[in-house]
Image (cartoon, rainbow, N blue to C red; front, side, top):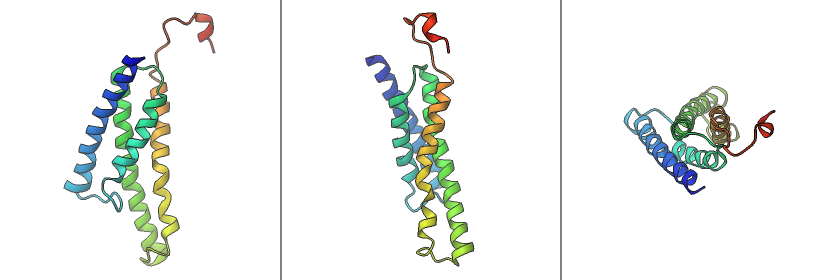
Length: 140
């Protein structure tokens, strides 16, 4: 149990580091709009990745690391898409009045749920069987 927890922490830390590098490159270096706060996609992905790491099935380290990194990158991509979509909605339908369009610009709040669910179901594809369970209990 302690080994699995340590592997979760290590995979989460490494994935968070790669997510921070990706977020800083996209938001600060390339100046691609990711929302009002450039670090927000990383924070939302951290919450999603912690939840995924907490409920992760028994998997290998590299699969866990790759999927948690994918959660960060998916959250970043969704942040870019929702920012562009919100900007387009404000300009097209509300003539640039951001206050009038405020309720329509909150759909970026659902992106951690999308990233977390995608990460969890991807990790389920890599799960390992538990060693001390009989073959009868594993049958669907």
